Image 1 (cartoon, protein in one colour):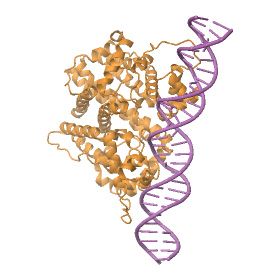
Image 2 (image 1 turned 180 degrees about the vertical axis):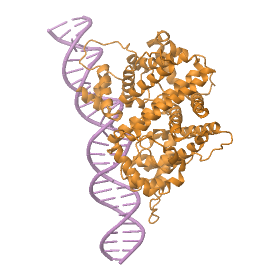
Image 3 (image 1 turned 180 degrees about the horizontal axis):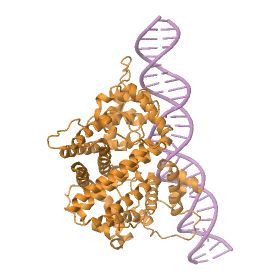
Image 4 (image 1 turned 90 degrees about the vertical axis):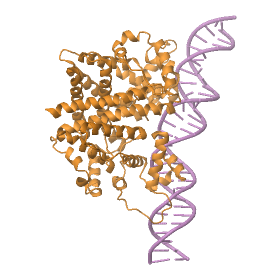
Length: 255
Length: 255
DNA sequence: GGTGACTAGTTTACAGCGTAAAGAGAAGGG
DNA sequence: CCCTTCTCTTTACGCTGTAAACTAGTCACC
């Protein structure tokens, strides 16, 4: 399920996001939006987004699924709140002493780590932003770094998009590679082995049909033994890709 | 639901993908893997990935959901087959007469159009590739263009990843923006309006808290009236982002 | 203090999902 | 003609988000 930003009762959701919901201290019996969001995050971190069901969250809190609806408008809104909450982990200030390139790399690295710590966050739609405070804080920080290039908003907007796409895309590959064994009941090695065997028998003329695929996959460094195939190559492509983008940015800076 | 490449009976799935399954012509009563895949694609194109259920596919073909299991191992495998089938639409040859930059742009444009024609294809996991013939054909084509740069596999692999991430990321934003109204029952304009109103009341100090967000969003050309907000800006960022990447590639070519 | 309003939480129910298991009915070979 | 084999249907299970109705506990007020 792709998760869309909340549709029902936008006011209530925004109030919860920005923390201006009137905190009803009276008559609280333990349950409130905060602990529900925490429980959701704990489940998502441990077992993935698909494991986050209203029943599962309720069970973790010792109540029924329906009890949650008193404090949270619905599941979509719960996911929005979870998303904005974890975004707060991302640091807000980067040292610009070593130049904007180094700062962007540090930012990208933090973003990457964040995505792997909370892979489910990658499933929240970017098309209808959650519009929570921490989402803006992250953007504000990145723009603060990029402004050091001396470029203006028109030039920097595509950079922001491209960086975000690259981080999210690379991280998604790794995140899915990690989720897959649990979802399919097959480890990465087993999967590639099983696929590879079938592969040879089903497409014996592979090298003739796709010579350039063989070419692009050639000339690789040997992989560390303990690394997952997809994971290792995705991380490599992630770092090099950031550099590629920044090389492109630099060509505009010089001019 | 993120769709993972098939786990059950890899042999059968690979045979179906590569078309070497023994075509059982005898005793066919209309139903076979091909028409099932076509029906799935038709539903997905018209109503999105979430509308593709075994029951829905069955209904479109005038049979029950369970009848499909005779011809297709399961839903994950059906989606894999749908994915590889539509990938065949992507052209296989690009004119290199105008240089590799123009060819990459043409490739990216075709890829972009493909993603918007079949937005559900963006939901197929990249971590466990489907390994169908058309997936390799697309890669083969792109590498054929990029090799014109004169760079080797080690340099080009990150380029392939970054291009793919950027196209997919940009297209996903648009695709989700188009899906969202149906999923949330609220048009894009209504949604932004409703959110915007709450926004002002809930975060009146926005400009002071996130000055750089305000800055980066400034200095925009006026938007065409008939364009969706997200859609318009995502396409703009897509095209400019490709150029940015290629600028980066070019710095390596010259050296 | 009694009483009505409000609120938090439970119970039940519904329509949808993927698919396992078993049965029905037709086609083809001996 | 019978028996095997294959296609398709029926039924069922456990899962999902959440609407609706109900229960119980707390507070304000006459």
